[in-house]
Length: 137
Image 1 (cartoon, rainbow, N blue to C red):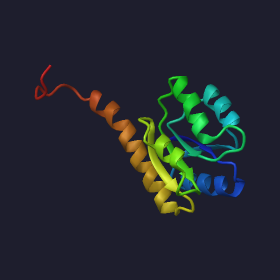
Image 2: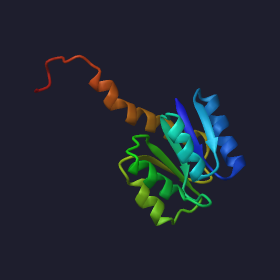
Image 3: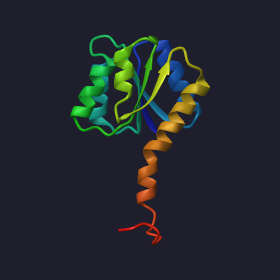
Image 4: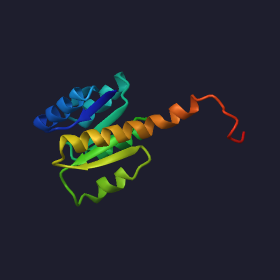
């Protein structure tokens, strides 16, 4: 799966990318909200791993921009601030599928990614099944 990592801390971004690559995903990393907007304009992604506190455009502002563009890409927010109520509110959005508090383990990250991808792919999988006659029209 193609995953965009938006994280301004280069070392954290590298760790996330390495874990996702090792797990068989195709990560792309950018370090600002502006770069993420450009990247999402040029390429399709299956998931965004989005830091809440980015310089310039915050992760929450980036998320709002993407929703305004009718983006359907699900988001996992990451933050180092447990008491960040704006992040918790944004994480309640219908396009947000996860929320991780830094520091998180590689296992926590991969579990959140697997859960997010399974939840977001489930409707597409069920709609592709032939009608078995058990559902009402």
